[in-house]
Image (cartoon, rainbow, N blue to C red; front, side, top):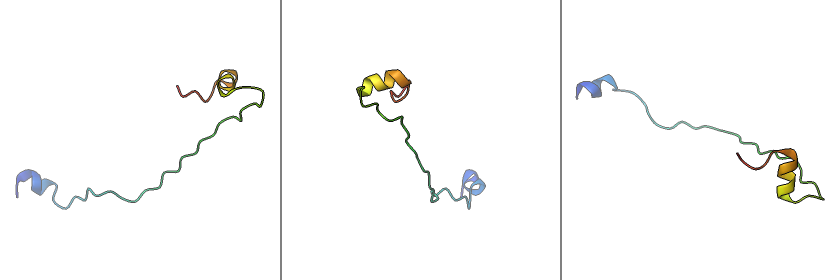
Length: 48
């Protein structure tokens, strides 16, 4: 075994189970506005 191999012998680099919840929240679209007008009015939803 190489010097580098001995240094890292026994290291486990496998992926571990993980849980990453993602929540998407947006202001409701005003019935009198288009989606673009709603983004301009509230300043959110355009994805900077």
